[in-house]
Amino acid sequence: MISISDFAADARAFLDAHCERRVEEQLGWGEGSDRVSMFEERSKDEEHALVARAKQWRNTVFDAGFGWITGPVEFGGGGLTADHQRAYNEAAAQYRTPDESPFVIGLGMVAPTILAHAIPEVRERYLRSLWRGDIIGCQLFSEPVAGSDLAGIQTRAVRDGDEWILTGQKVWTSGAQFSDIGEIITRTSPDKPKHKGLTMFLIDMRDPAIEVRPLRQMTGGASFNEVFLTELRVPDSHRLGDVDEGWGVALTTLMNERMAIGAGGGGGGGSDRSFVRFVQMAKHYGVDREPVMRQKLADYYVHSQAARLNNLRAVSKVKAGQTPGPELSIAKLASTNNMQRASKLVGDVLGPRLVADTGEWGTFAWSEMVLGVPGGRIAGGSDEVMHNILGERVLGLPKEPGHQR
Ligand SMILES: Cc1cc2nc3c(=O)[nH]c(=O)nc-3n(C[C@H](O)[C@H](O)[C@H](O)COP(=O)(O)OP(=O)(O)OC[C@H]3O[C@@H](n4cnc5c(N)ncnc54)[C@H](O)[C@@H]3O)c2cc1C
Image: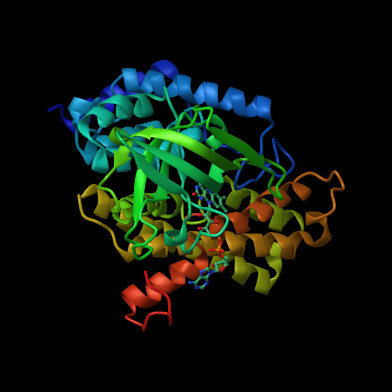
């Protein structure tokens, strides 16, 4: 196996050949773009261009052997270790690489579930294409009456010989508009207790039996959708896991989701460009000299750093082959609490400038981020649900009356 240092040198040579080195941004107040967002809002044309660029970049990275470093060789992976992956990540952080956000769900949640639960032919058919960026995956879990209580979903799957017929409605499906495949949870045995009659499938999002309708968010963009399925036929080979055992499969996906949203992030923004912008803003308006504001700033920074370190703990557990438990719920909650802190601070400094667009640089622009934060507090398990998990599983408090998980 190639040594870590040789691998890191190869990674740097590859990145040198394809990307520019990242130079620390030294922009002052009023310089450059003032855009600060949580879910970046894009026009359809911008979205098409982003997806095309991201696919092209993943093709290049994968073909050079850096696209799925730790994946099993038989499905197109590099068969290397988590340390090799870390070496690549550290090298890539020094370069301006293209935005890969269209792949977050497909690679962060769907691909690990396919690897863990699909039959070998299905793994062979999709894993390489997902990791190479030829196709994109989405997650079809939530329904109008089932979000936090995911086991309450109603989309039906009825067996018909070697196929299943799926009918129902999903909602809040991020990226369905540009996805090629979807991981969908369905009800196969309505007569069984609700966690026991569920089955997971992989579906073709381009099938005419699927209709994707965009939903506009309060931030202005439309990054998620309603998805209607009308008698969609799915081969039994595309079942993930056993019939009526979909709940266990969903837990694989949800654990990876918390990893991608919470532990995968920086802990709520304390070390990124938005924090630098924030300090500049505080100085510009002279509030950096106010004792209460200074305390709030320091509080936000300390919490962000603590969250970042906790995330590293969860990530290193995963990389060491262990299953992280409550760290992922803590990571998700800490990250969204910090985003909420940041939102409040921005409001404290800017006041009415945050909601009325006066054209002043670096003011109204924050509204895109502030309006995105509630979405972050809901996506991937709401704050309240994370509190419940920590209360019950870490502190050993009694379960909610009448609520089973
Ligand atoms: C940005 C974003 C992206 C998303 N992307 C996807 C996606 O790609 N695929 C997908 O399937 N879904 C997606 N979702 C949906 C998300 O998973 C659900 O919104 C989430 O699970 C909450 O479900 P709900 O919206 O039905 O709210 P509900 O479950 O109805 O909750 C409403 C309120 O009640 C509270 N609540 C619910 N149960 C409890 C309880 N037991 N104890 C205390 N309080 C409780 C909640 O915290 C919340 O405040 C996305 C959501 C967002 C915001």
